[in-house]
Image (cartoon, rainbow, N blue to C red; front, top):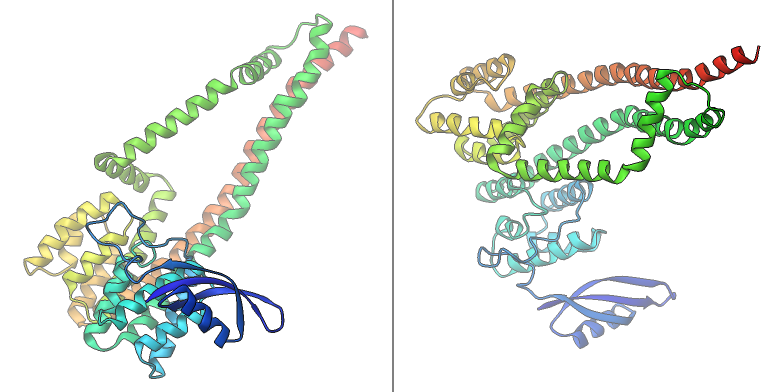
Length: 409
């Protein structure tokens, strides 16, 4: 059975569009007319196998992409509610197709539903679309299917996705104001130095007036920028290309990620974000029934820092040999003492999952406090830097004017 995209007119005259499954385009038109929709355009979207990805076709589009965290969170919550209400999986996926407004996600659910109808597993269907479903998502769904607790796992996934989306929105909204101030400062300084200052200094040069050294230096700088701007732009582009090439190499990426962790102020913040994500996802996966090794295999993929990922290889090797988690983490030197202490306490008490979640909450709260502190520090720094630049520009303009007034007197 194929899937068709359609545009049609309802009885009220309203234009509608969507997707429908049928054997042929003619059958799709008949189904639409049975729904009292009058098709104006029907075209095949994909067949039952076109949405899947295999190892033999890696160059083809991987999944459909273009799905926001919000859409994925909403879909996850709706699926969990439908399954908890007792709806069979295939019917729940059909309901999701009708409820989902994102066209790409809608097509993906269609492909997954066809695979489930043919006897496949939900996790395997999702694994064919890695741009939409992360390894964390796929492995948790697989664990839920194996243990018979899929709806509970989906609710936990919904909590994780919702929490990550809120934390990201909090960071973006908090950093928006200082970012705006920084851009505004650059625009103001650029306008004063490249537009206003040359026009004023031209008045002095036409009078053959001797200019102060400060004014001459600034004039020379602005002349250089306006004359050789293309060289400066090319240099910035070249540096960016070299940086992208360097970080695309595993050794370069590891060195860059290590450098980010060592930056003052921002390095500790990044480490806290990693620890919070690590603890929350590991705790949720263990709570969903995954073994420690399987959970660690997935957690490594979401750390987002190659330097710490390499340290995780040694930690996982130690855990595989039968050691606990806390001792190898301490030996790696990459995790804070508080994190290690909480993991050790969870192992001793047999409540590692809940202890990891508490640790994640602690780090997330700490991240918010740290971001607020950084923003409160950045705002006056930006204002002071902008004030200094503007002050220098004003002085470079006022000094020749004062000299001219003195000579006139």
